[in-house]
Image 1 (cartoon, rainbow, N blue to C red):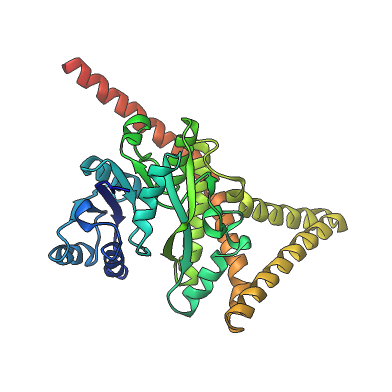
Image 2: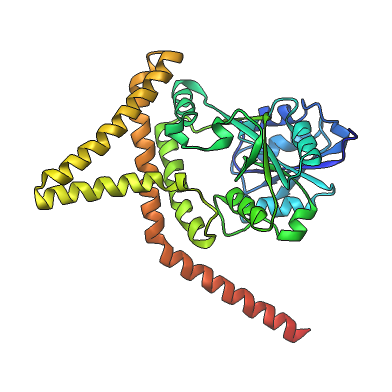
Length: 351
């Protein structure tokens, strides 16, 4: 296959710990370097990310560095897409590394399979003992539910894939990334692709190595933020999020409700249901902690037992926070829309 010119786009912010390995993995690809432009869109980094990119540009002139004053990923992607010169867009993440065939397989899959977005499987890794423990948790069904791109081992059409590879004309046809989405912008875009009759295809041979948070506060913060944005995203774009994204919310709500009903009614019924729910959860918790420890090292067992409920409760309480933020968020979005409409009206009047 004659490989086309492509634009590789990476949103970055404060990635000095990972940027060198990321750039090295990009230019170790078996895709012809002369057919790539690699666009880094920086969201006001406060570390040496931009300086390091300019230094590496001496060895790799394909690197382009752009500014993203709005900081968030959807703004970065839209800036990169507008600046891109190729007909194929490959989105990467600086917090990850890529096997040498990642870009080639992504492009080949897009061009040979009936799909509008091609992606692969995300292998989560961590740095240090705690990072390794967190990565192991996130690689199990209890940690991520039925997320295909984390646990699948076959090629198939799916609801979403990590990152992505698209024809540039797709964004002309259905619009760019939704800039309201601080998180879940990939889910929203893939939902819009499907809504417009498109398809998302996962090739399990396309693999990306993603480095997760490597501290308990870090993974809890991520879970809390994801939980918050799942509620907001589902409200703004119904159907864009799966059932699995709200299981932690249901778990937290049921725990709180059953505990309150037990205290108020002094009924064994509610107390029994609470014990049954937590008994089932702890059995799964211990089982998956055991499977991880058996495979890796028994030192992992106690930390895995603790990690699952900490992560799930942070996620669930994040969703509760999202529910409380909805009125304010929707009010702000309405005000922005009205302001934008007013500005458009003024421009038309002047014209």
